[in-house]
Image (cartoon, rainbow, N blue to C red; front, side, top):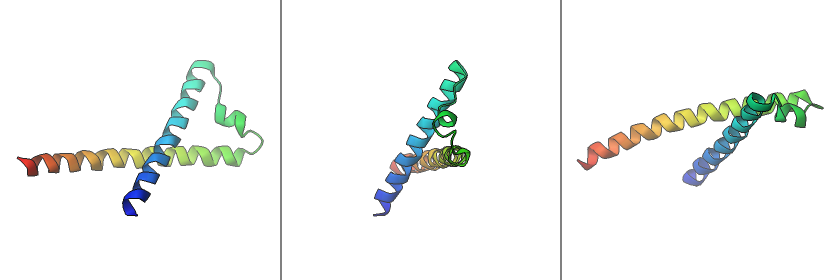
Length: 79
């Protein structure tokens, strides 16, 4: 169960980071904020999405660092 939950949160974080990346691409190329456009009627929802995207980026950064550390440990143990 722990592996499934970890996998779920990793996928969820990745999806949020992709959404954030696409939003920034649209802002950079077309000056169009998709999240703001979709949720302009409720700015608190847009803010919540921005917070979730930021937390997802932090989660993925930590996941990347921990994963690299584990890979180095595995290489050392194999040799």
